[in-house]
Amino acid sequence: MSKLSSIEDVERRAQQEQERAAQDAERESVSPEGQAPATAQPAPASDQGDMTAEQEEEFHGLDTTQPMGAGHKALIVIAVVVVIVAILYIVNSWIHFI
Image (cartoon, rainbow, N blue to C red):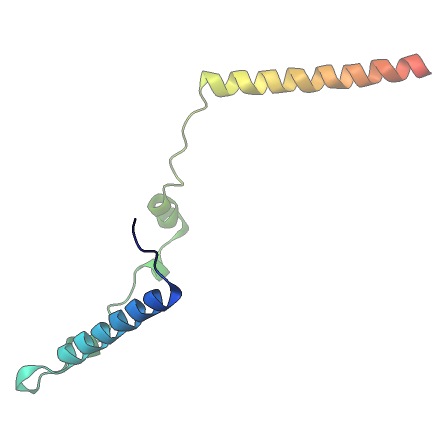
């Protein structure tokens, strides 16, 4: 049987990962020959803020609409028929009370 992780084990592992990440970041920030660290460079500007509505639709795949298949059309027809039959059933039952 395998040992279940307790909350303390999970927290200890998370703390160890954070310490490793901090040490890695420290190593990267100290670079030879006095060069600026790679993380100090400004991030490149994002193009997503400048996208037009058409570009966003294309990016998210919203501009591609699939044609309705025969199965979808059949389901719509069946649903409409069921609604009409239900309405006629209700109207018929009301007529008997009047």
